[in-house]
Image (tube, rainbow, N blue to C red; front, side, top):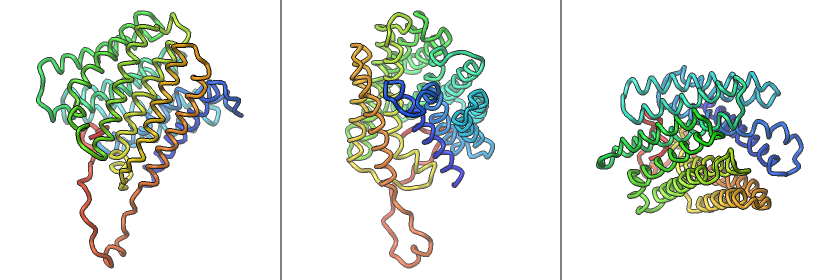
Length: 376
């Protein structure tokens, strides 16, 4: 458990340093910010999400060797921050290879479209990181790295979709989106053809998620279930917006088209998913109970306001909006983390349990299934 918490700590370090570099990129004169600005994307995607997804997948698989994935990605972050970017990139690539091996093991035990999609997501991370290690720039590999996150989330939402009645054409539409992601990433977001294919992919996957995801029903419930559903629906909106932005503002032809689409996906879609899933992922990974509180809507609103500012600033070439979006994103994330940490319910020690009356039975815990679920 100490090892798991250590990995989560390294993920948090990658998030904070990546965001610090992002603030420098937006024009804030921060000490040491220029060096971190160059590592901004790698720290967030490989350092933060590579570590967290690798840890989640290792817990789901239950094999000791699978914990090499979050360990290597955490090591990659430390190497990056210590001034050894080449060694750090190599560690990230090895982490992606271990994650791919773990996901293939899961897929072999449970062959299905959703496990195959998780394999595709891990392969996308490995492909992008190897290309980056070989000298490609971050914009050139961004399609692969974003594909890692998008396919991981989409695959696990597909798993949950099995709880609903299967609709005609559901899997075909989903697989079309996956194929377009791969084609767009291969051609590159900076090429007109690649941007078009990727934009279409995001629109197709958004249509699938809105039509077939269980959140269409869970949003009608209350409390934590409704909060999670709202997080996901809001994220789907930004995923579709990113697809539209890639079509309307191709990165190769506009000054801020790349920035707008990238942050619509990474902040609007992915972090919204994190907000919605944290209340079940952290208990499964760190073995703690976290109490849901309505105050969590505060950071969620701030997060989406920050994305709106960023995208509006990019579309309108409005620098103040772009500049303010960074600090607002940081406040939203730190506020959410603070509420999550403050909501941890202490488990009674065994000695306490013998001297106190038994507490009411908690809700049934959610344990990661074979697909390392990203959110019930």
